[in-house]
Image (tube, rainbow over all chains, first blue to last red; front, top):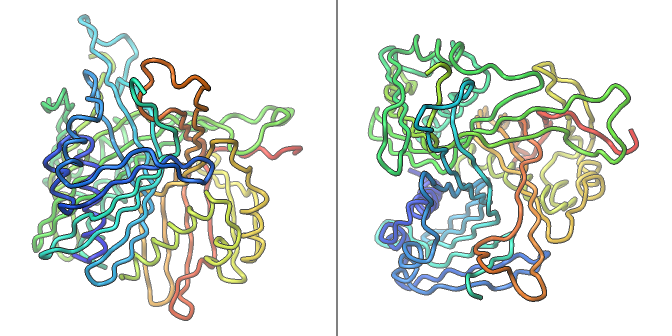
Length: 160
Length: 160
Length: 160
């Protein structure tokens, strides 16, 4: 498998871990001393929102700081139009992302209404921006050493 | 072209065939005795929804069981964040998918209203989940031998 | 990097230039005498909408003819399910695209309302279709020589 595809698949596993709220799968993608920086892209001037340091803390945040899915709910963090540059054991990746939340309808006790056909639920794009991870090859596998998330939307934190 | 990209392009042709409701293009992507299994991912516990057996039946379902597009309508089955593993002449692919339906507005007889600018229509995400095909290389080209579709939303069937 | 990935990354840079309304970045992706043809896919019968000739005019259109982003707004032209064929120094690419517009909410002077959590804003899919560029390798780098955009939605032009 090409270096570029290996790098791209690290990001594919990152979004799987995010959607599954799987902290240990997430930690495994990062170097021990990795850093995640989140920015809000205020009219082109990135404004710091949050920072996480260390693979353990990054995994912990995935498992405990992200909102759990509601009943019949799931999310898809999707990434697009990757620009990947590999230089030896170092790599950069720039991707667009769009996050979709979905909630399936609950089947009425007496069945779906007349005329209902196909998937029953709602899908809502809730977040977008750019992922810009830097990765390093260590012992033959690529790990994220620094991950920059640039959000298009401002973030509200409960109680803040 | 790398094996991984060949495998990915089979899925790209699969979504083209789906959106075009093109049964023969769809059949050609599957091994003769291929199987499609559709599950609803009920809170993480996949529940069987439907099963199709054989390339001919799979093509037939594409052409006749999917709802036709409405006037000025089209769909885009889009796939994201592929995780591909190739082992000789066998391959697995795991992709997220989101389906968008679109319906273009009808141009009024006296032209678009004042101030209208750009694309005139609506685009709605209606379905999402994971595609997990297994493929096999036969006579140099990759075919789907087993396709698993995991839907996030429950399905309603007319008259069921 | 494989030829196919190089071709795909030209399209990735194309959507970056579009979203940034960056005319010079856009021009640099096209051959000097390149042509862009835009069609509305009226029920499967493509109908010409607009045509641009020359890298300079294509860049100029990106910078001045596209609507500027509103305050706190941005767009993501995203592409999906690429089918790429490279033949020597010629290449074709067929991709689905979906365009999302996003507008972030403005933080109230007295802070986000109680209960607000996560990204604050709206994301709307506004345009979709197919990109079908043809590229040529010139002096080692791929340029778009002819770009076909097939829109699912009819276009309205101000004052037309």
